[in-house]
Length: 314
Ligand SMILES: [Zn+2]
Image 1 (cartoon, rainbow, N blue to C red):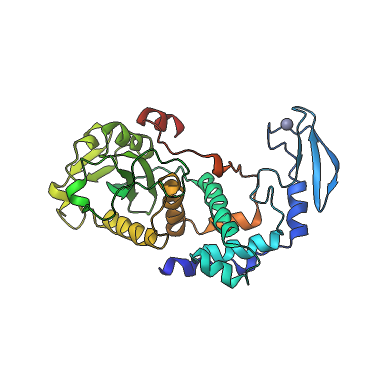
Image 2: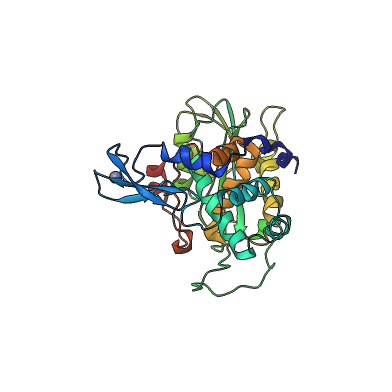
């Protein structure tokens, strides 16, 4: 994909010392946001702080992707740059002369994807908006405890199984013609109207919403709904071409990861969207504009929120 070439971040490399200084000058407690903090010595190169409000200690790396890492920030930057080119983990490790291991490379990728989630844009879609769903096989790859029986691979063609299978993960997408997008795994099996309702908050009033015949879309209010029979284009304006393209690129993009574990699907979908929409993300990552909360992904469990909970998050 050509998108990758757009990620030119060469000029944004910053020395570790400068980054740490920048972080140290970001005088806010990463836990409670208070300004009442004082310096509390150094550990290695990073400044330690203590918050007088919540009494927590932290370092300038707390809540950044560099937290709990013994590798240098320069290595991270090298990694992020290669990562932003969409290279496979193996390639990245090779290009970095094995300065990091394969498992580290895997872990870093997810740390970065996790952080990127926070860049999720909340722009509303407007004008002519296309919406549709696509489905991915469920995968519990990498999970220690399988809650479902392993299935044989490749037994289903998508069309036959959609609407029936609970082993499929539904990814809901909406795009407008200004290239704003919404794109999120919403649950197992056929899309429900509650899941579709999430879109309500993301589509500007009086937009034209184009979908296939799926009934659930009729629950979206304040839009002019245009439902195309079998998803077939009605005119040069009323079609689902953009979203079909988006989904086919998304599927191709996923192939390189060899069957994504469902618990990471959200991250990858977001990763894909970042490539398409917001090349700036990588620049921001490299320049560390502010703190990004990083959750411990190793502890994360699979599971989707209900439509109602999802709506509350938005
Ligand atoms: Zn605090």
